[in-house]
Length: 273
Figure 1 (tube, helix red, strand yellow):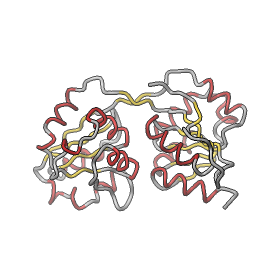
Figure 2 (cartoon, rainbow, N blue to C red; figure 1 turned 60 degrees about the vertical axis):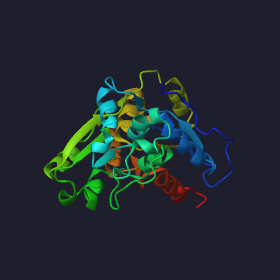
Figure 3 (cartoon, rainbow, N blue to C red; figure 1 turned 30 degrees about the vertical axis):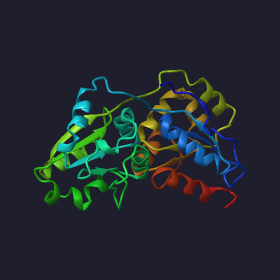
Figure 4 (cartoon, rainbow, N blue to C red; figure 1 turned 180 degrees about the vertical axis):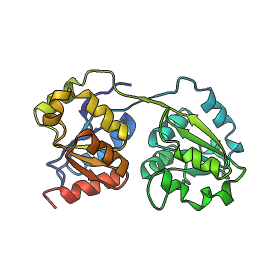
């Protein structure tokens, strides 16, 4: 899968309250396309340049085994939309693959939406923060509920260990499964650089810390201050916002999670509002 730069909306741009917004979407291709369509319906010009490329894991055997034995688990946790996509996409519509007794968890609305699209209707989600800490606050993941029970975590090839470690301490038997591999783009960002130099981008969205780190690495160091760091960054979590500030961005707006959080923040800051 390539890091391809293009107008994100499949349909004609609509007139709307975000008509002045030319926003760079850095998500992987599948979720980026949905974000782009929603923004375009409000008049924005979405520009997709995935700064994280999602690929199947090098070894699919652990994933295949976990899915074959999914009935043995108390819970399945999908840590991101990509985890849901890459775990479940090969099975098409798969409700029959997941037992009714299985607790299915998502850390936020983006992952829950991806699971719903894949045929999983009942998803448990944090009521507090949309992250591992929020998941760990749920009653169905407390020690009294999970001690001695098996939990599978579908995740990428790297990331935080907080969730796994906390569940182990609570007495669960935890199987972390690599459902996908993520990497930075390895194609030249020619189109992106052209649009940045022409000042055709006036905002960017980041829904992972990798998105920020990989984007910055694509821009020549001596041009980052002029091309990138003055742009407003809409970051969907405080950790992502901190990564953006540490990288050098000067205007970082922390939003609520997912597309809804991004759109709300854009509407609040749009001159039309």
